[in-house]
Image 1 (tube, rainbow, N blue to C red):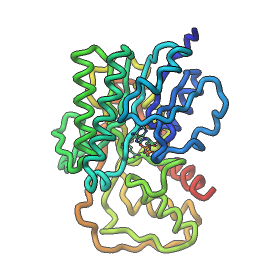
Image 2 (image 1 turned 120 degrees about the vertical axis):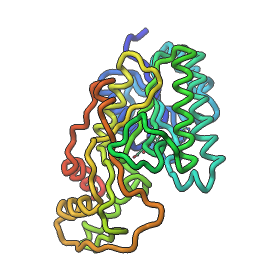
Image 3 (image 1 turned 30 degrees about the horizontal axis):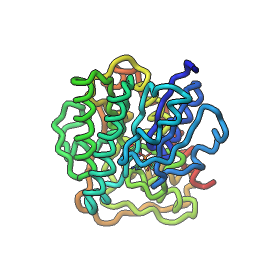
Image 4 (image 1 turned 180 degrees about the vertical axis):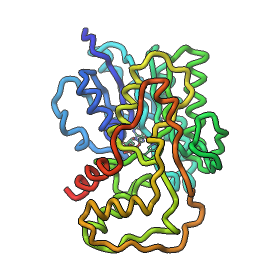
Length: 319
Ligand SMILES: NC(=O)c1ccc[n+]([C@@H]2O[C@H](COP(=O)([O-])OP(=O)(O)OC[C@H]3O[C@@H](n4cnc5c(N)ncnc54)[C@H](O)[C@@H]3O)[C@@H](O)[C@H]2O)c1
């Protein structure tokens, strides 16, 4: 039987998932993508079509992983590691439909962990989110700050982190929850609640139309490029240990919406005017990660400059 690591990537057909699969395949791992294609697309993995090291399984994690992976285990042997990214990702959807979020994101995570525990998987990495923090008043945001999530999405991510920690402490399963900040890059759903603003600005700037900013535009976010995020995931996946405590994944740099609009406008030919409308109620005014822990734990620091990541993103949106 092969000695290349066998890694399951839930949500591997999605935006962050498909970039993570690219990295794993490039380093010679055998990869099983588990995805229900609710937002993920087979075309995101087209580059690897027919490759013997990639298997794509149409499985809903809320139904468990045992049946879906059984055949592959007989051919490839036991699963070594799991990268768990599958989720419904809309905060607004979770507020409108909390029971769906609980089934998909929370029960789904417990199902993945149940497989990991029973099959004695070595390590699990989990896509958590900055949404676990809620309204923070001190910056940069540290992992040990009190978490008071303001949505079912944030609650289910935080609850899932507790499940990982429990498995690490009680069942000896190494685990690493990663709290992503605002991830952007090629293959992102243009309607994504996280960085939708990038695709909206990009579409309008390409057409030379006005870029409209809600509020004074001085609200900030920590935008981190998907290539950096997939590198963090793979580094965490193969790092020794993991006690289930979370690490932020961001750049540690805050960017205002005004700066973002100006950069995108410039990258698209500089033909748009930038204007402002009334502030949107409930919008968080500031967000930036403390990134010390990811460096200490698995040597990760974001490397892609915003202007370079935006150039790639804007070009992919135009294609
Ligand atoms: N994009 C961001 O800025 C960001 C920020 C914080 C956290 N996250 C988290 O990162 C992960 C990946 O997000 P993304 O931006 O790539 O979103 P995405 O929608 O592109 O990817 C999610 C993937 O999970 C799959 N999926 C959803 N429910 C499933 C289920 N029940 N069973 C099997 N597959 C299922 C979808 O089909 C999709 O392929 C998610 O867990 C998300 O909550 C993303």
